[in-house]
Amino acid sequence: MKTKQLFAILVLVGVFMLNITARQVLAATELARVNSAVITLEDFNKKYRENMKFFQFKAPTKKGVLDDLIKRELGIQEAKRAGLDKDPEVIDRMNTVLYHALIDKKLSKDFENIHITDDEAKSYYSKNPEIRTSHVFVAVRPDAAPEQEKKAREKIKKIQDEALKDGKMSFAEVAQRYSEGVAAPMGGDIDYQTKDKLDPAYYETAVKLKTVGRISSIVRSQFGYHIIKLTAMRPWDETDKAQVKRLLFDERRSQIYEKFMTKLRQQASVTVKQNLLKD
Image 1 (cartoon, rainbow, N blue to C red):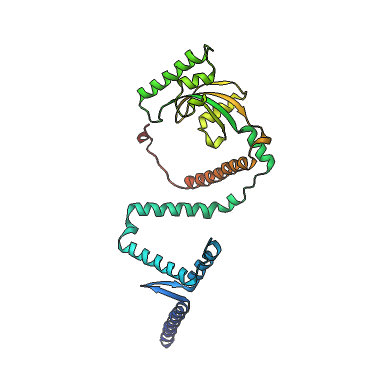
Image 2 (image 1 turned 90 degrees about the vertical axis):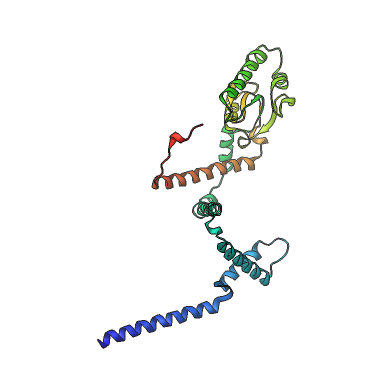
């Protein structure tokens, strides 16, 4: 019995000493207190180092950094008192921050390890060149009503059959007379464009023409209907190689991201009511 009592006393003494030690450590590192929230010396030093590392015009002072931390804490506390942490819009924004933080934490090293060589960039460019095109264009929105879609389709088909095929006018003249959009006055010319600057359907159709001077059949993009003429392809030696590397880098980064998200989806339970997805 005495042994049990002694053991209990020793446990209580140990807990008491641990609490004293914890309070002593906190007191030793506590730099400021905002109501019940503590700003530790470690928190301050970390923020101060960040400010010193990234400032541009005026070096931060320790007093200024501490004032900013206090203001931040006051703002957070007031926001919680106002119930903003339970507001659906705020929660959605916070979740977006969490999502981006996850991507940064899990994939940033993989992104940093992407290195594009000159040979890889050249090979990529051979399949995805910078092209110059002209087009005859009839605008129609992707969510257009069926009658609007039909009207636009009939208009560009008529241009194709009656204006382009008879050969009485050049492609540029047809574009000037019948095309819609800002490029019409220039004969439909939209100058040189890289893959990332064009609608995917438009770019793929133009590249498949391969031969300068060839004209495509009618193609639907997200903007409307086009008849495309390939007018030039910029040679590798004349292109912006840094830009090509950036495009390839972006594609590889996208592949890493998609692989990561596919794995997460496979590990989760995801159901979709496809019948509710109606165009």
